[in-house]
Every structure is written in C-alpha cells, then in structure tokens.
Length: 419
Ligand SMILES: [Zn+2]
Image (tube, rainbow, N blue to C red; front, side, top):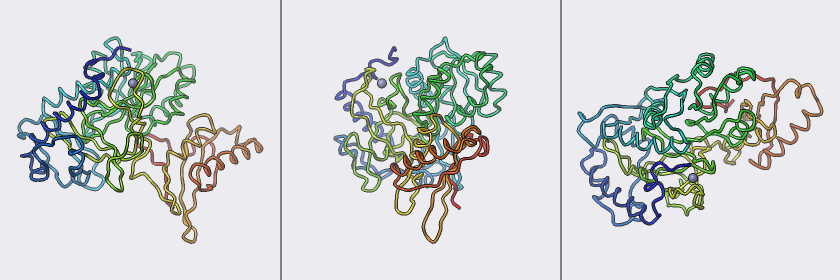
C-alpha cells in the first residue's frame, strides 16, 4: 500500500530524532510567553534526554489553566474551540487557529491514508460532529483525501442501515461498541445490500477478538485509531499490518514513563504514554500525561514506516480496579470471555463486598440454546472461571443470562458496577 508522506514517514531514526529536537526547541521558544508555561520551562534543551527531565502537564493542569491560560497565540487568531466532557464541572478545552486546522488535516490525512482511503471511497461517519473532536478528524482527514463523507453522526441505527444500503458507503467510522451493536442489528439478508468493507474505530478500546470476528463473519477489516480531545486530532492508527498503531512522529514526540516513578521506561516496557506537540499554534501541549497504558513495539514495522508503533490502548490508569490487593483491568476479563465464546458478547462486572472481602461476579449474555444445554453450560462456566483465575488470580462467579438482558452498549463502555 502506498505511503502518503513517504519522506516523513520513512525518515531514518537518527534524522527523525534530530528533527524532533529541533521542533521541541521551536515549541519551547514559542510557549515562553504563554501564561501557564511562564517560568516553568527553559527556552531550549540540548538533547531529548534533557527534555525528558522537564515537568509534566496533567489533565488537572489543563483544568487549572481554564479557560485561556494555555493559549499560545492572540485570542483573535482562534477559529474553533473544542471541549472534553466536564464531568467534574470544568471541561478541558482545545483551541485551534486556522493554521492548526491545516496541520490537523495533514495529520489526519496521514492516518486515514494508512487504511488506503482515497477519492474513490465513501465513508459513513457514525461519530459526532460536536464539542468533542472525534467527527472533526473525519472532516479533515477523509475529506482531505478527497473521499465522500456522510456525516451521519452516532445512534439512530435504522437510519444508519438505510443510508448504508442507499448510498453504499464502503468505509465507516464509529466506536467499536457501536459497530458491534450495528452488526448485531443488521440481518444476514440486509448485509447483502451493504457495501462496507473497511471500518475505522476509535474512542474506546478495540479488542483483537472483535477485529477477528468482523473479518471472519463479515469480511470487514477494522483499523484501530487512537486520539484525544486535548490534542484535537488523532495520535496513532494502524497500518495494513494490523500489528500496532503508528504514532505520527512528525507531529508528536512520544515517551513511555513509569506512572509511579515518572522515569522514562526502556523501549518495550508497558507504562503511561506521554505526548508532546511538535507542531501546533494555539495550544502546544508539552509532556502531557495521557493516563493511557501502552508500550512501544521494539521491532520496526514491515510496512516500511519508521514512526514508532504502540500496542493498542486497552486500559487507562484510571480504569484499574483493585480487588483484594490485585490490580485488574476490565479488558483482561473481556479477553477471557471473548476467547471462550469465540465472539464478542455483552457482559457486566459486579463487585460486591462481603465482610471486607471483595467478590467478583460476571454476568455474560449467551444464546438460549447454550443456556438450555446443562452440560455445555457447566463446561463453559468451568473454562471461563479457570481462564479468569489464571489471568487475574481471582476466582469469579459466572452468571449466564439470555441475550439482550443487559442494556445495549453504546458509546463509552460502562461495564463495572460496585454494589
Ligand atoms: Zn506499519
């Protein structure tokens, strides 16, 4: 598959590091008059390791800087303001100038080109064009490559299906949760009239199992995308090798740090992803702690790109649940369930406390024919319990329930209940 920005994306590692240091110094000199950064950062650094000693920026810092303390240009240059959900009261903002929109377009075109998208394609964008930045990535990237964008937005499944049948989009963009729901609703007969071949997903973790299931059952190739509102654009995406997500290192400088010691971790070790904007006018973020856990894949990608690849983000530091002293991520539980059922299904995790001991119960939706087959059910329960015990070192209780018992999962997964 053709590499769109061949020179940038295949730059020899040493040249790439020199370029990143040069851009970091440009950004450092640019932000010296930004109210939030004033007196917090040096004007320049001599090396990337010196840069890695500088202070971090956290989500709380972004809230403290609300609304305009992180603005690095005159306010009249702003053309768009996005915001993340302000569940704690103050949203985190992301402001952009006209030049930023051009930079986002370049970055998004790079990511969308990883999927082979071109002017011949039609993409149904089933994510929102709203305060968040998700849908806007499609606007910049897919339109930038000349593809036809159908901004259908999220939800309204019957209308999505009608549009898919009528306008024959061959690409779509949605959260993995919504894509799963959509595939469950579309009947086998309807699928014959639908031209979808490639789905891009972002906004929540995508499991390998669902990616495989979509390929085998629907011949639908899923590309995993990773972005966040704070940066207003995508950060990483899979290439056609589907073995990790390339970070656009022309636009971001990535680091992996130990969340406890804050020290840089050796390549290949899991830790928190920290990102720095190498290009951005209104709001360059420097050493921003994403709270997302991943690792850099040490091997270079066979696709020819030299930009690093990270493992798909399956959990955030904040998602971690501690049960009787054991750190557990819901994704570990999901992996076990999907492995044994050979498909993605709906499930719910209950955590109860009995005499100060926490207990874990997992409700799993399965078909009636398995529920009614006692011996099959016992074997399935046994194998899931054993597999979970091996993975999370806790013996859970499994409860099988009929399909469609758990409210449909749309948008961010809310699968853990503390009772
Ligand atoms: Zn690659």
